[in-house]
Image (cartoon, rainbow, N blue to C red; front, side, top):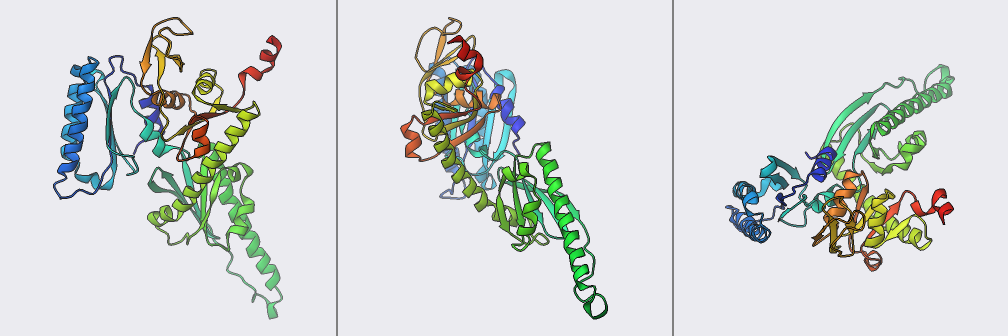
Length: 387
């Protein structure tokens, strides 16, 4: 399973010789059981990648990794329905191999100075670390969902008093007993909510709740305000009998709806903030400037966004103008055919949230790249004084 630390490691890697190889394999239904189509596809891509490497003088250092990828492809045979990603650089003795959810746009092989992270960030975006909590009046089960892998991490139980409305002579104590039972249930729900707050403090960023419908109105008021802000929603399930696969299946529609609504909301927010000359940056030039000044909170990137740029070989400065010399340090720049990977690497390195926007005409109309800002450096007190 790939972790956030793995992704940060990949983003930090750089090959000065341009020999960083990224291989993404997306399984598909073959015409026959031999899976020869998969191997042929990878061979064609490897041949094309080697041809490009030869053009740029990177043939020798890339060939060994390409041969290992070709050998791997010969034995994938569908990879049990899972996608696969390989990141390699033979010159630096680097090889990382991960199984992924089968949601990649396709099989692809890229050789460059840095690893091609766009398919990886598209799978991982929006919901980094999620806790799914199943709760009723006597038990709570805590699951962790990362990408499409789910596992149960913790289980809590309690006991309610075995008293009801018929207790006491002629039901005299019935009301008191029922109130006692309800109070015990409230205390239990509060203890589960407190545990969720502890998980929030430890780094969980999103929560889902699964319970019986009649329990949700009792449990929801117990949640801490910080947890409520991170709550994706709730779904109906039996906490006592649900399996991990059933929990994941029930949670997926809630997550999908959240993603859809959040993407639309972020697009509206960023465009609105930009038009108010506030916490929104639209277009490549403005986003690059905001990344460099540390203003960016969330980077938004269209699925089909691509643009040329240059990067300083000395200080790393990115410029949308295709200049030969860096505007910051004056050293020579190198041209990037597509700046998207450089944007994503910068965002991952700096812990910036990445959201991929698909098929949004309004977003495409403003350039296909934007950022929600934490602050505006040019609107700080010191900046205003200097004007």
